Image 1 (tube, rainbow, N blue to C red):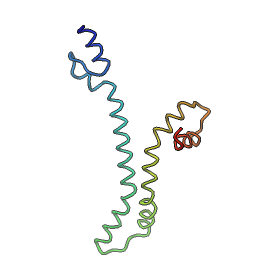
Image 2: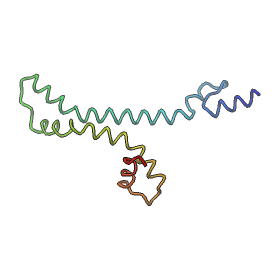
Image 3: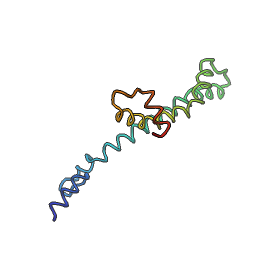
Image 4: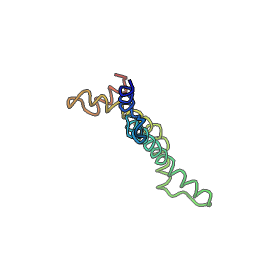
Length: 117
């Protein structure tokens, strides 16, 4: 019946009566998760490569890199893979921690998530 189909559409975030409902449906929470993860990956990229870019600007200007910029570049560029790993693993750690309740520490949840449990 038509009313049954409309109820199904509303449940899944679509409605023939109100086109704004689709923006408020279940996919909205997934969109927010994707947005937050994209922002986290972008920030890790700029954290890793920002100091190197500043140092390159000094090189282009025929100037010596400041020692702080050298240390920052030499520290954060190799850590980009670690930052990406942490961002990738974070949802799994949250899921393990929520399933274990208060009995699971962050470290234990991280070990379980890394081991694939």
